[in-house]
Length: 281
Image 1 (cartoon, helix red, strand yellow):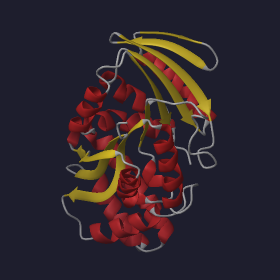
Image 2: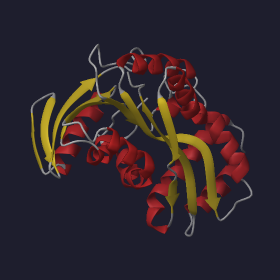
Image 3: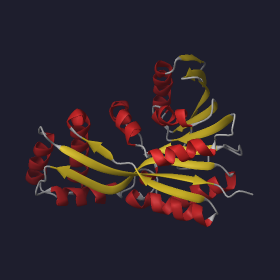
């Protein structure tokens, strides 16, 4: 599946401020003695994960952005060019500089459903993704984690859905709406039945079996008055998903949505980050 550029832009600042800093600092320490790193970013969208991760990595970075959506990859080139201090680009490659770091960036259109390991025999230092693994199936996670372990790369993923959600002020329909939303979330997003809130646990258990040291940390969106546009978009998205389940009446859902669009609404939407380091030989 793919997401609209408007949605990805709307969530980017909140994604970045919500990352678990303990894990980010562990990532920085792990690569502290490296002069350069090669990073594969899966489901890269507009390149937000690159913009959120680059500052924790060494000075010289080679990024390979992988996405199924060619239009998003094209838009990512423009987003990165506008963000960087300096950027020059050809059709599939960009050289950029940001805050003293030198980035070589490739853009690859690949079908991750068919191939969860698009590094094609290369040996990346880091494999990463943001807001991806809750959308894939348990079977896909098994294939993916085996490929990660075979590569020997470190692994870092952020902002995976974990089923925690709190809306303020409370509404009598919150429980029914949330249950219906989670039911919809577990549907097929193109990879088979989605792992949803089980994704982080499944990844952790699989990598630990292959000898990886795994750490997990919460990274919730904590949204208030300054985030009204994002809160409204979340509520709209929930309502659309719940409507497709038929588990909440239209009248109840409409009342809930009107309440959530109103002033004073706040929410906490739970996510989890995961960092995994390969066994030392």
